[in-house]
Amino acid sequence: MKSRFYMIFVLTLVAVISSGLLAYFAVYTQPYIEKNKKAEIEKAIKEVVPGTIESKVLKDENKFKIFAGYDKDGKLLGYAVYTVGTGFQDLITIMFGVDKHLEKMYRLEVLEQKETPGLGAKITDENIFLKFWKNKNIRGEIILAKPPKGESELKDNEVNAISGATISSRSVVTIVNKALKRVKEEVKNG
Amino acid sequence: MDLLIIFVSALLINNFVLSYFLGICPFLGVSNKLSSAVSMGMAVTFVMTITAVVTWPIYHLILAPYHLEFLEIVSFILVIASLVQFVEMFIRKTSEAIYDALGIYLPLITTNCAILGFALIAVLKNYTYIETIVFGVGAGLGFTLALVIMAGIREELDFADVPESLKGPGITLLVAGILALAFMGFAGLIK
Amino acid sequence: MDENKSYLYDFIKGLWKENPVLVQLLGMCPTLAVTNAVENAIAMSVAVVFVLTASAIIISLIRKLIPAQVRIASYIVVIATFVTMADRYLAAFYPAQSKALGPFIPLIVVNCIILGRMEAFASKNGVFRSILDALGMSFGFAIALLLMSSFREILGNGTWLNMRVLGSWWDNWMVMILPPGAFLTLGTIVGVSRFIQTKLKKA
Image (cartoon, rainbow over the protein chains, first blue to last red):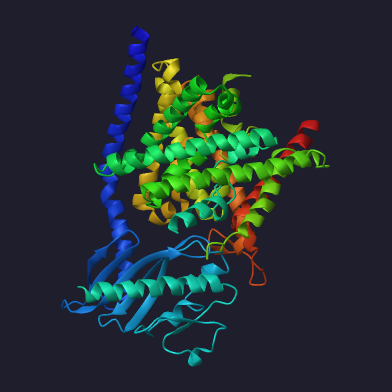
């Protein structure tokens, strides 16, 4: 009987000490972890909505967020949209910025992806893929140009596919179009 | 539709063994005979499903609401260890046939990183309760699939003339590499 | 064997003769998963050195107080505590590495190297020898990881620790940084190290 009591006592003691230690350590690291998370999102917002000084969360879901970007006088510049969708391999997380009238896309950034290195992963490459997304007309849908066209021949709502990684390119287009549709609804309804 | 994607993805595209590298120890250890590979696979699938059922409420109903996320690792590993013990006891009492088939594999599962890895990834991906359970079944079956294919190949390998120093783990890893190459062909399946 | 020699042996056995990865084939999951870049391998190794050594110190200190029946449970709690610390420390101060390693830092808990050393060594020996053993084993782990990741990053990306080592003439072997490359590299390394060990034994 005594040994069983001792057994439980020791195990409880170990557990209590460990959770105490962890609680202390968690309180110590928490502000840093939160700061990192916030800094990452904020940096992306500033990238995709140029000139943003301050941002406000308008919609905060797991896989869909809208942020409003304001300049230093508090004037609305546009919206940054955070969205997640399926790619070739796994989920792709994207952030893009649109103007406040929802007519023009400023920029697109790929925050997270696990596409095939050397092929699909080129969706993060500025010169091969991302540059086509600058200043696009988004009154309608974005259209994927396949086979790729010369840069001057692209219409203002077309982006080039990456050769050898059409599926990844198309995934990005699909994810963006889906998100565009939602943004328009959300903004219209306030 | 989302559930189907999660299931197929865990089963084939992001196979736990061949693409996430979880559960490599049993993959190397128990894959020399087809019959034991099937039993081990079933045991893992079983425990993984129950882990899904149990760990989701622990994280989302107890840890997260009270900001105790830092106890995630400690509580998950303890829960899994006691769960495995409990399952073993339960099976021994209820069904002799199942116990004979799975019994010796159950204790090994506690240290199988696929189970804890699964619980952590499910939290990381922010799955709902149903999604977590589907993910668990898919991941478990994916593990079984990889193990069974490997065992099938290794039974044939016994008759091959493998260089002395590559025998055992060496050649198993090389075969696994080729298998992983083949599984890469599943990517893009859900599009 | 005199005292000093055996102390030295506690340390160096983990580096090669009883190397946890290459010889004992323990801790394979992180070995395969985080070695696609040297940077990740280093972060992982540092975390393992910390967790293994810290757990060895605590467990060898309290080894006489713990009843045999709850031994493993206590070890796991101690290990999980240090792993959580390492995980949160990385998330707070090295967010990029923490993201790249994903769930593999928490998974150190079930890394068989750690629990194995606790059961086989730290629970039976004094603090000083346990520290030597833990350092030897974790350095052995680090050596294997460094070897793997160097091969994979150089062949797969033409770089080492993000520095260009192969010229532009090099056509990246993409497969090396993908999952199959991990298995192929480890299979080859295990085979070669076995070959060398049997040769040395005969000599």
